[in-house]
Image (cartoon, rainbow over all chains, first blue to last red; front, side):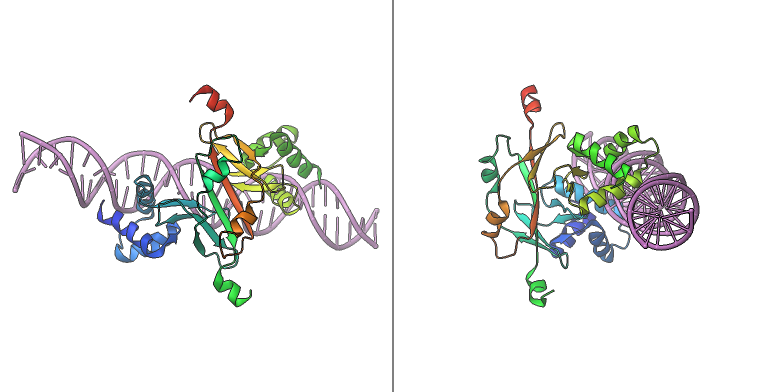
Length: 121
Length: 121
DNA sequence: AATAAATTTAGAATAATTCCATTTATATCA
DNA sequence: TGATATAAATGGAATTATTCTAAATTTATT
C-alpha cells in the first residue's frame, strides 16, 4: 500500500461511489503529480485486494464503490446519484428459480432519489 | 423500416444476443456496403421502437437482445455465452424491500453454462 | 416527378481504458 | 546501512467502442 494508492482509496472512501475521472480529479488535489493511469492501476489493485468494488451501470459509466461487501445499487434516473440498497440474499432467491448455478450477480435498480422526488421533477 | 435496418434486426434475431461488432460482421455478409455507424444507428432506432433490447454486462461489452420483453440474463464465466433467465416479477419483490421507487432494473447473473459444466472446466 | 424527410455513408472526433517502456519508490536481506 | 530486487508510478502512445458531422443517397409524400 503506497502513498498514492492510499490516496486513491481515501478519496473513494470520502466520496462513496465515484467514477475514475472523479477520483482522479480529487486525488490530484493532494498529489498534483497524480496521473490517470495510476488511478486505474490502483483501482484495479484495490479491487483485487477486495478493499473496493467495481460497479458498471447500464448507462455506460464505470463506478467504484468504497464498500466491498455485497449489496445492491440504485441510480436516480433524474440526477444520476447512486444509492445503496440492502435487498438481502438475492443469490439464494435467484438460485431457487433456475437450474443454472448462481455464482454472483450484478444488479442496478433505476429509481428516483428522495431529493428529486421532493422537487417533483 | 429500411432494408438495412431489417437486415440488422434479422441478424440479431438469428443470433439472439450479440455485440454491435458481431452484428456488423454478419450484416456485412448480406450487405457488403454496410458500415458500423449504420449498425449503431439502427440498433438505437430498433431499441427506441421496442423491437430489441440493450444489455450492458459487468464485463464491459454491450450486447443487444432480440427479445425486448422483460427478462433477465446470465453470462457464463467460462465461455462468455449469454443465456436467458426467467426469474419472474422481481420489480415487485424489490419494491417490497425498499422505500425507493423501483422504476426498472438491470440484472446480470454470473453462471456456468451447461456445456462448460459438462466439460468440467 | 418534385420535394421533403429520413437514412446511410465515410471518416473524423471523442472518451474511456489499457499498454508499454522508463523512471522512481519501496522492501529485502547480507 | 547499502545493494539489490521487486513493485509501483509515470507519461505518452495505442486501442477500442462509440458518437458526431456533413455530404450523398434513399425513401416517402404531394
